[in-house]
View 1 (cartoon, rainbow, N blue to C red):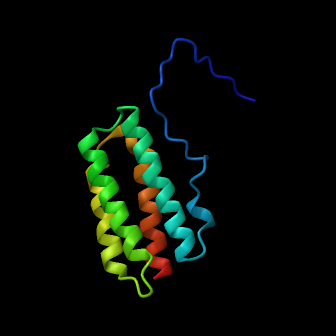
View 2 (view 1 turned 60 degrees about the horizontal axis):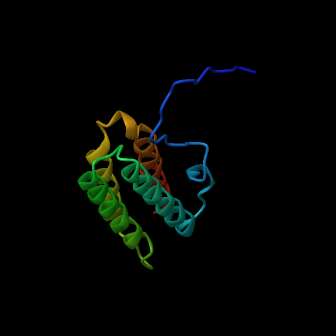
Length: 116
């Protein structure tokens, strides 16, 4: 087993890819909505830790919420969902601290293409 000396390190926020968000378990629309909601909460945590600028957090959350709202419809518009998720990704794609979140959004995009 590997051991890492982490003395002296200060971490304000760290995306935990092995945490509660698991797009690999998504089987249907309801599962996707659930994981997107978790992703939105993760973005909130990053904003609270001041790792992502508050304005960017608001923009990303808005786009993800629009994707969630569309996904909940009886006949969701696949292109609208994709557009919102792509826009969310664009807001944070260049932030190294948000790399895990960007990866989560990209996985959601793949799932939308499969599910709808």
